[in-house]
Image (tube, rainbow, N blue to C red; front, side):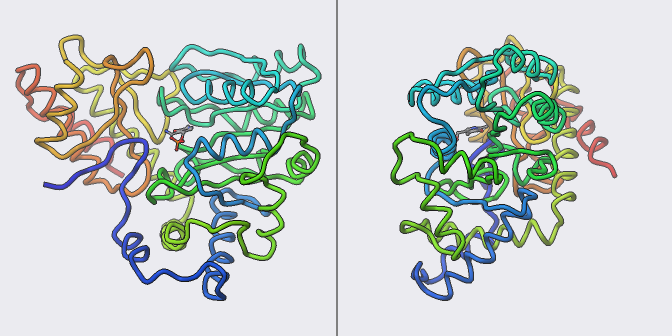
Length: 377
Ligand code: PMP
């Protein structure tokens, strides 16, 4: 039986990528690796849709979030955050930890912040140095209209627009330069189809100015060093060499498929998952559902742990549960990364069967049929 990952990180690693990472390790100060870095830098610029630098760090996603905060802001800076879930909340925690002054806008879990609310709060806090957003709130399966929100922020203020794109970059539409984003981070174990351990931070010219004027202490995560190295296709420290070699391959896969086709595939797959879950009576959790992670309420009579374990042990399908107060109340199915139509049907069918078995009700294939219809071109 195969393990089929439908979790919002880690996501499946394509065999092509795994094989590249299994090859003999190059030295990171060799000409061969410099060329790999040059290719990867360019590939990352295409995925973020920017002509500016996209730095690489050795960490999980939270490390890149921390790096963005300490490099762009200084203690005492007023920074607006939007907390609509676990990861929006993390921005506030990070700012607090480093002595910045967060102004937190809270949104009920499952709802998306709108541009007018962000604009109104910025009007009331004219001294805000930045706005920290979560493009795709993985804990609730909710995506925000980043293009419109970024444009409203730009019209109102000079604040840096910093975005957690951890569960969206390389999977959902995000146009860094065109939308006027200043800083955006993502991690390897999501849309980029790699194991965890590598993260990325795209920076605008305005963000680079902020990096140079921040007085927050930093060493390992200092973007000033990383920027200098980036210009020479180098890294300040020993990089996660094998992950970068794997990235070279996965970026090639995205390029071969075409970024906009990748976005479309994710949107289509998420709509098939939504159709499947709805067909068996599961109510969607989000008012603005994400194209990469689907959250839905579990039926009252379904015990989460029993269901999750059955789904995994009988069907090999691994999904995620709710976080925080929603543990045991919702499920989350990810279609991030390396999935084709048949994978999506397997996940939906596995879920339907396991629900039926746990609740002792017949499963005539309603979820599967609905997903098939939704996948039809
Ligand atoms: N932000 C978002 C939107 C995420 O989905 C995640 C991981 N699920 C994180 C931040 C944190 O990343 P990590 O667990 O890799 O530190």
